[in-house]
Length: 296
Ligand SMILES: C[S@@+](CC[C@H](N)C(=O)[O-])C[C@H]1O[C@@H](n2cnc3c(N)ncnc32)[C@H](O)[C@@H]1O
Image 1 (cartoon, rainbow, N blue to C red):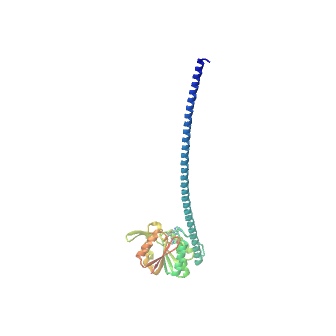
Image 2: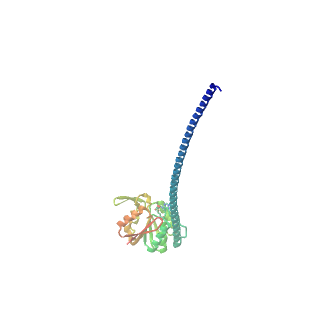
Image 3: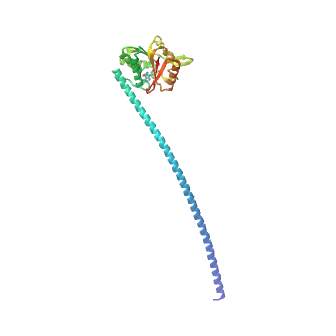
C-alpha cells in the first residue's frame, strides 16, 4: 500500500470518527431533551392530577352540602304541607260536625244555603245557637244578615220567645235573608232592617256605619252578633258597633264577634275593652275566630 492510500484511508477514518462522535453528541442532546420533556410532562400531569383531585373533592363536598340543604328544606316543606293538610282536614271535619249539629239541634225542614266564605262558618253559627239557647234573650241585635239571622230566629222559635233585629246595608241581601226566613217559617222571629251605610263620626274619626235610626227605641238587648258591615270598606269597619250600640246591652248580655282571627277585629275588640270596662272577653276556637264579650 502506498503512502497516498494510507493517507486517504487515515483521513477517511478520521472523518468517519468525527462524524460518529458528532452523531453521538447530537444523540445525547436529543436524549437529554427527551428526558427533560418527559419529566416536565410527568410533573405537569401530577400537578393536573392533584388539581383535578382537589377540584373533585371540593365539588363533592359542595354537592353533599347542597344536597343536605335541599334535603332539610324538603323535609321542612313536607312537614309544613302535612301539618297544613291535617289542620285543613281537622277544620273541615269540625265544620261538618257543627253543621250536622245545627241540622239536628234546630230540626231544619229544608236544607241550608252555603255557609263559610261571606256567610258565617258552621262553628260560629253553632256558637250563636248555643248562646241564644242558653241566654234566651228577649232582644237580639245583629250587624249583617244572612245565615246567622236564620240560626238566631230558629233558636228563638225553639225557645218560644224573643226577637232578632238584623241590620243589613244591602237591599238585595235584605230580600235574600227575608226569603230565607220565610222559607224556614221563622219570619215572625226576625226583622231584617235595611240600614244603608252612612258617614258616621266617632271621636273625630269618620266611619261608614249602618243607619241605626230604626233601633232608636230598642233597649234591653240580651245578645249581639257582630259580623258586618263587610270588612273591606275600611279599617276598623265594625268598631262603631261599640259606641253606637253597646249602651243598649243589658247586664249579663253577650256579644259574639265573628272574624276575630283578623288583626283589624283584634284591634277593634282591644279598643272596646279599653272603653267599656264592664265587658269581659273570652276567645273561642272558631274557623275565622270568635270573641265573646260578656257584660258584667
Ligand atoms: C260577612 S257577611 C255577613 C254574613 C251573615 N252574618 C251570615 O251569617 O250569613 C257581610 C255582608 O255580606 C253580604 N252577604 C250576605 N250573604 C252573602 C253571600 N252569600 N254572598 C255574598 N255576600 C253576602 C251581606 O250584605 C252581609 O251584610
